[in-house]
Image (cartoon, rainbow, N blue to C red; front, side):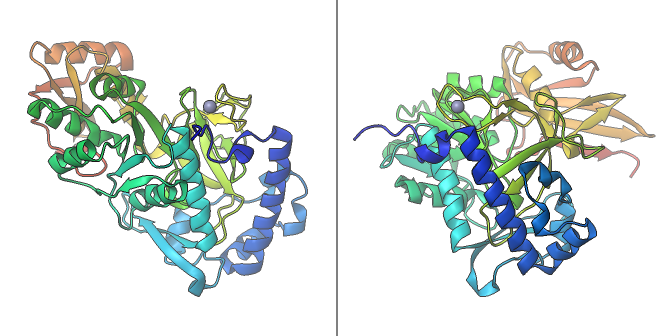
Length: 427
Ligand SMILES: [Zn+2]
């Protein structure tokens, strides 16, 4: 069988003119659909003074009001549903830090759309029908497990639905079923490396890692390549856009994330003014879905920080625009002594120090209104707290205190890692 380069060659390589046509049709259809079928949306569009007929060109998208996570929360559970409830086939939900859930409901067409996006991602990472993928995100309300599953089924992969936990068993499954691709949160991988090293095992068949839900640095990508021989892919998507993979992934060139543009319109806006920024400028990613039916999104503000890298055809042959890998989320930005930074920058800086391992915590301690930062990091013998302090001072511009921990001694998370810990000493 010839090797697939694309899951959907036509969609992934269509000309930009053709894409623009598909996008305009999808946008008009989606605006008509939400207007006709959902009271919340009709009210929101009415307040903005827009009717479906006003969308005559792609530029008219800026007439539409933004949608936020708060809107999803206020419309809990199904206030944004645009199809009859009896046609819903699945739901997923995320809670986030504030607790009020965000719900995504899928009808049959939405599940097909999700599977299509995920199949494209898996083939883009180099997985071929019939090859084995081990899915380590939980199968549950969080969308990760099922998202990978729907895509793998669609593309005809051999699925090992391991779900999370039990690292020894994960390794056994990967070894015995010749798993080629692991789907995971990236912060789980150092744990796998640790157990492999401790038990003297290797995983020669494992070639690909697809990592979602957390941002990670290029230093982490190199680390995983060195330790496991895998090529690490950064998959993008969230509950509100329809789940993992819906908004794309990087290709083997690793020069940005290909957004599935026949499925979503991407805008990058200035978060303060709401105005679209020029290509290359960092801002907030905003997505509009073009084919989703259950809970379509119009101009959803993700709070994710990125920029448009290119609209040229990629070396891989795909024509979709590429956005930068997510630098961070506006909500995750830390400000200490007047310096702004993101956890990913700390990770990148730490892994530049020889002997430092990819397990760390950023501890923010506040006393009398003053916040100090402590970095707890695991490292091999010979690395000192002073080395960490000095390097972070050079890279980030302020001096956190560095505390070195022996390998394997920092707490390990199941699922997403908790990198930032806030301690208020006055409470
Ligand atoms: Zn590419």
